[in-house]
Amino acid sequence: MFNAKGIVLAITLAFAGSAFAQTATPNIDKRQANQERRIDQGVKSGELTTKEANRLEKREAKLQSDKEKAKADGVVTKKERAKLQHEANRDSKAIYRQKHDAQKAK
Image 1 (cartoon, one colour):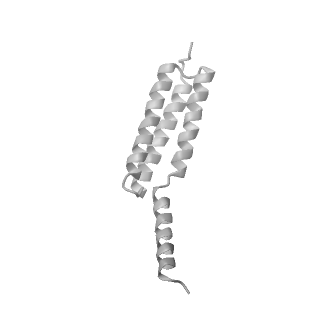
Image 2 (spheres, helix red, strand yellow):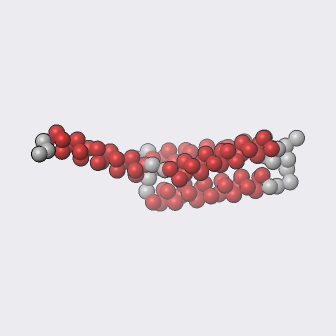
Image 3 (cartoon, helix red, strand yellow):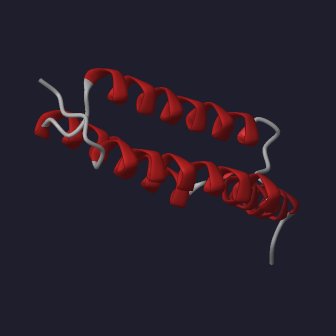
């Protein structure tokens, strides 16, 4: 038989697990890491100028800030996830455009 403490502990763990799942953003985290690698690779290869890389890094910092704001209340809603995904898509396209434009680092 379960005692009262065991039931309370089980309920607490269940809520803690669901709270974590509601604020987890693994897809955005992976995208951010990938986009950071792309920027670093672009700088190393000369495809990105310092100015371009700085601008792209600022975009990535804004995405991180927006992600932290979405998590602040303990729940990342579908609408917030969609906004973050859209922002990551825009950033990814910006990285591509900057890496494939005519500007090269000296």
